[in-house]
Amino acid sequence: MRRETVPIDMASEQKTILGFISRRQLIYIIVGGAIIYALVPIVFGLFPNFIAGAIAGIITALPIAFLVFMFGFWRKNKLHLNYDYYFLIKLGYKNQIGIWRKGSKPKDWMVNK
Image 1 (cartoon, rainbow, N blue to C red):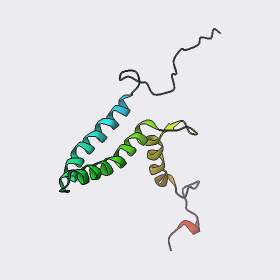
Image 2 (cartoon, rainbow, N blue to C red; image 1 turned 180 degrees about the vertical axis):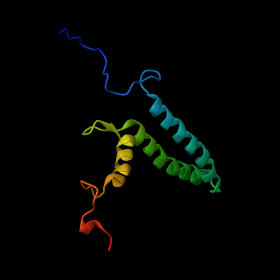
Image 3 (cartoon, rainbow, N blue to C red; image 1 turned 90 degrees about the vertical axis):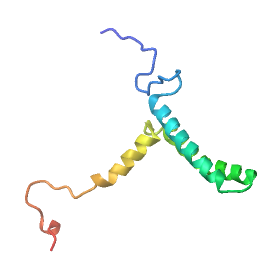
Image 4 (spheres, rainbow, N blue to C red; image 1 turned 180 degrees about the horizontal axis):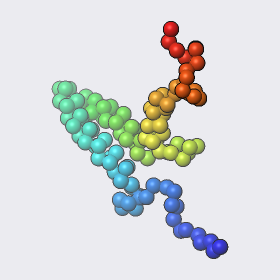
């Protein structure tokens, strides 16, 4: 059988926007930017001084920017997952835990008394 070398990585996410950003990352940037755009003027208006308002706006925007960067761009290399997929799996894990049994008749210790 003939083997060919593929010049691109077929397993990773395709970078379709300008060659270095994927659609998923672009959505995170747009949503995070919209939240910051809506939130910072409100926080800025709460302070009478320009300097205090600017500092409060930056402090408000930093956690949102960190979350966008973490979910959009960081990977959990050990599992080869992006952090958004990793946290979705972790959130759904609790629903998958249960008492599993074989057969249709429950054991005595499984029945509520």
